[in-house]
Image (cartoon, one colour):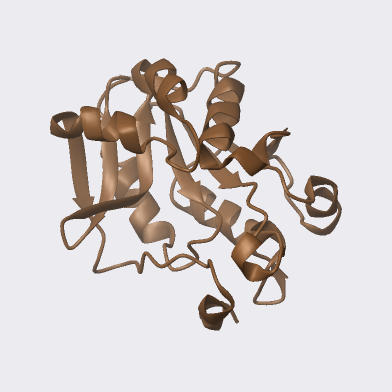
Amino acid sequence: MTKPMIAGLLLAAGGGRRLGGRPKALLDHHGRPLVEHAVRVLREGGCTRVHVVLGADADAVREKASLPGCVLIDNPDWEEGMGSSLRAGIASLHTTEADATLVSLVDQPGIGPAAMARVYAAYRSPDTLAAAAYEGERGHPVLFGADHWAGIAASAVGDRGARAYLKEHAEEITLVECGDVARAYDIDTPADLVHLE
């Protein structure tokens, strides 16, 4: 059996409304834009190809962040919420030979390569659905086999992303416990910036 091609999909379009309009992709993390860290984590977790969905200040992200080898997708509808970014990202994957995609969010720097690699390793076939779990609760990253892409894109609206689809297919999801290697906080408010250095 040939090794599956699992593409990374990073959702990095958010405008940081609760952060005073600071795009999350450009938040400073160890002296570099947060989006660079998120791409590196996907690559170190096993994804050789990474698609990055940009939205808020996309031109500034392209200018300031070093993202060599990434497929950059502009989501003009980013203000509609995560669903539009997920749809844009999945649409870009249809031009690839990918068997699955590993989806992560730019604003979760506490989730590192170990968690990515665990969920990546849960792939079995194009109908795989897998997700990281934290003390049994489903979180990110999530892995979507290609057989699910159309259904996920059709149900991804507003800020819910794939939530409705995953709820409908809950019994098919392989949960991969990652609470021992990752912390699943989001960077949403100024108080959360303490997690960035």
